[in-house]
Length: 542
Image (cartoon, rainbow, N blue to C red):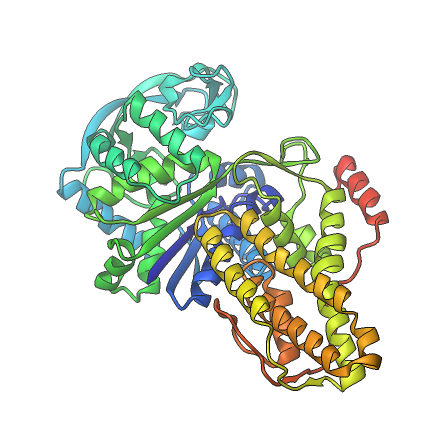
């Protein structure tokens, strides 16, 4: 099966915080799982380099937008690589390939009648002498009464146009903007009401928040969306008469999934169709709650307009991750920054915690106490302890070698059932359930070691001792496969103890056990670290 996995594209205007990873790591788990099954996987994402956030940051730092975007793009690449995010391509919207593909698609949409011209009233700041991009406009959301930007309300997730806001202000100078007319291009989103209803009625693997929010948007009625903006930084409009405008970031950013996939297909559009336009393939889109309408309403409508009518779409949309009981706030520096945590902590510990405590169905919380306790008790005390005491015992008492003793059929069935059950959970975006299923096998292994007491039977019944150790090793060998989507660094190290190559998603029996040099998978984290990290967070230190 051909599988596309797309992680949403982060804005390249500042460092990533931990909340962002809650919708990044699941994509990698899916990619590693499907590769292990033998599926043909394209796993893509990239840095969103255009739009207002980068322009604002550039003005603040007196730099060119490209300089800002390139800096954070490199930082993102380093962070994702350090966490083992195994992208086939981590692209950026400010690339020759992306610009070329987006322009081609915009021209096709225009020629096919899905994009049209319209004279519209635009928000203009007389003090700044410029049309204001949506994020340069702030006001009151007409739907929930919260403070909102001109493109979207973060509090209720409603997609907005600047004219919707109450008490509009220019974010640059604080003055009240006026309205001026400007000619723009619009996408006929309203035309795809029936297509989206059909998509929703046949959905499989969509999270509840995506279903409910999409139903709400369809019920409220779809409005055509502007394709162009009066901006200086972005992709040029490939149509005559619009040379002074740029393509609006909302449409060109989601087209990044296609431009990156096409790059992975070496420009072969027939192959791209096999991945994106077939009921026999599968497309996962992984993102946060605030990005749901872009991935379930806007992007599917664009796909329909471009002729992608058979997309087998799965939506993995997370809720929000909080920090020590409060919302992340970059302005108040209430955040755990990714460059910091990857420098000081095991990447597998980060991955594991954000998966087993991820905001799958409701908001969840990151606390330093829970994070460190999770590492010490579950990874080190549960999984690591089982591996260490089993393999150390073999190394010490049998010179690292155990011959084939025959695997207990019941244990084999339990392992096979774990592959089946955990795999189904991963495909459904239920990563907590998958981890709990796999860790039941960890507990089974620890229980087997405890109950069979090899430290006693080695003196009284050596055959039974060997049998126990052989069974424990088979559990460990398969755990190195099963946990690979979650904690790949530790699993690669573990497979190295046995001289095993790539992970696979099927039962594996290692009949002649010969151990290589051993090492601990995890080190204990001092509990004093909890107080240090909480104090550091509260002090606002980076």
